[in-house]
Image (cartoon, rainbow, N blue to C red; front, side, top):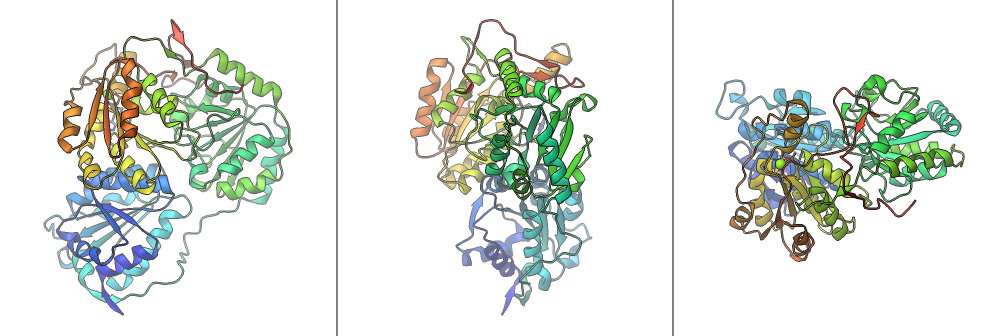
Length: 569
Ligand SMILES: Cc1ncc(C[n+]2csc(CCOP(=O)(O)OP(=O)(O)O)c2C)c(N)n1
Ligand SMILES: [Mg+2]
């Protein structure tokens, strides 16, 4: 049966199991929008800025494991997606971005709202297409989803001229996608897996570093099994948070620039690093030449390009984390590393890292801890970028798999709110909180309207310090406290929220925190809380740029109060 290109796109989306698309319309994508009412199974969520569409699709994809879909018109609509696409690219998030393009005869003529978006996004997409022939559209949509979700996931963009959306063709979709030059390796090489098992079985001080690959591969049980069989301590990257329950006795938190001191010390002392689905980002390794100086390194990753990129690797295993661990675990001998685990526990006692000092003023760490307690570690947390993000990583303890959604690779301010929209739409039964900065929040604040129009019950906790805080922290530490352009005014967020039709509270004192959180949770719809936190609070621990992981700066120790990190030990 013949159908218009726009209908072919919708048929393709339905076949791929798409349920939600985030977007904003415009002239070049009108034929697609005009067709949407024929497909009520495709829920469209109108955002207020295309960056919001891309981040919402990203949050949706991370929270559900499905492919997120965003749609924009040509020119400015397409370029507004760019930051969101780059964000998904760096964090390996499966996304399909559909953009309208000017009609084929106008391509290359600097037509109204013409931008070469496939050119622009070439380095930040896993693959992209400009569709010149309507008869290839069904195949391309299928391929795009296949590429986005398989192997190392990533964003794929399909740019579709308006006349291609209108032109008719037979709907012919191949039953299978077979791309000669694209065959991700899923099975780890058996000899390499054996070598890895031998190293693990011989190690005295083994340490697992879990990354987002564990979450993407849903290898929670396999990771836990490996850790438990051989009693191996587990630390995570920022994006690996919630790949392993943080209340587990073998969990030692996040490593890296703002990681736990004891996690960084463990890397320094380990004789074997088992790096799983992570990519040795510079925020993780700190000074590369001093990274894990006593350790052999096993690196399991689905992307061969990651092997040996930043850190020398003794046993590379290219494959899907879940499949590799499943085989590896069968070769691991059950042992206990009593002295080693004891050593980490001692370090954790001596360098608690998540202490919250007594303070008259409202501390962000305290607020986040209270959100953690109130939600009982069951919420999905998304974040802005900056201090708020690191406090959210450090002071909420993630037990629920895949419950921390944050912009790691690109570090995109403004990610939190739209990502939460996507997460809540994808997981309506989960509580979803954004822990945001006052600067980050203002970058995509307009998405409050999306919460209202589509009745999305996201709870927003703004850590208002009146600064671009992380930048101010760097100015304090490295630029002689010269706070050039980091002092940040903000509107009255309570009034702003109310203007959008969202109830909101301002919290200035410790005693008000719990009741405000409870009010937000009791309310059925979206809710905003403006927490007026101590303006010059810093994020610690911190590894200074250029320093080794083990040279970690800890929070000042005076008048501290410690919260027990976990029941055991
Ligand atoms: C889009 C974007 N622009 C600039 C930066 C650089 N940057 C990193 S953190 C930060 C400050 C963030 O301020 P805020 O959201 O208030 O968070 P805080 O650190 O105060 O918690 C800035 C400007 C960035 N990461 N992203
Ligand atoms: Mg701030």
